[in-house]
Length: 252
Image (cartoon, rainbow, N blue to C red; front, side, top):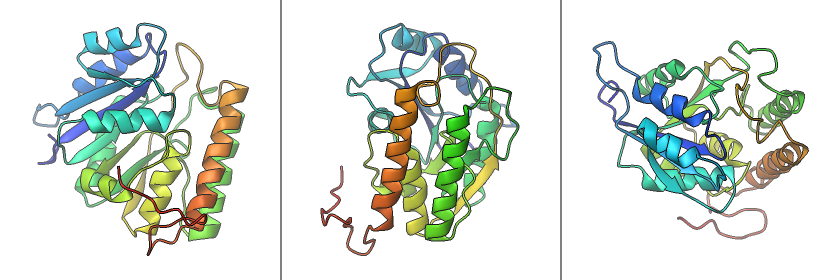
């Protein structure tokens, strides 16, 4: 519980056996100034791992659900569905790339009235090698497009973020892959939600390689997913819930 708001954390993870345990532990150790635990629930979605990710997460104290269909968005959707009812959902990657204590800054932004709080890596400090060149360039291009198309300044599509649960339901999230983060931010803009950015520091991975910036497949997939989502949402008719191809968006 944080300032009378119940909080649930979601961690999508694939082959992060060396990283996920410390992330779970750090989240469960988060305390308010009064010494009370911040999290009311924590779910790790094991997204088809071939290592001990699920076992390490569970040993650290997380509830673990399995999702064999690959995809960042799919893992997030599966974890959200498993969460107990909460007021705020916190999204964290399971790769030790963030300072977990800064989750309190995201939650403070929500408590102060924001619907969606984005942890901006561009506004915070970054360890050398924490982000690849394609990740940095991709974020800048996506931010520029969002500013041109919707007139809103976006410095990052970072995965470290918090959102009110009622706002998340209104967004009707659909993407199952790399377009997840930009879908959330652009839909929030389209619905005139209050979106704020909070500086977060980015750490270099201690174990493994990034699924996005560390492989050519990840770079290409993320680029297509993000740019494709921006294009679809740009021509989405918000008043009718339809996209350019005239297919209605159904609820989950």
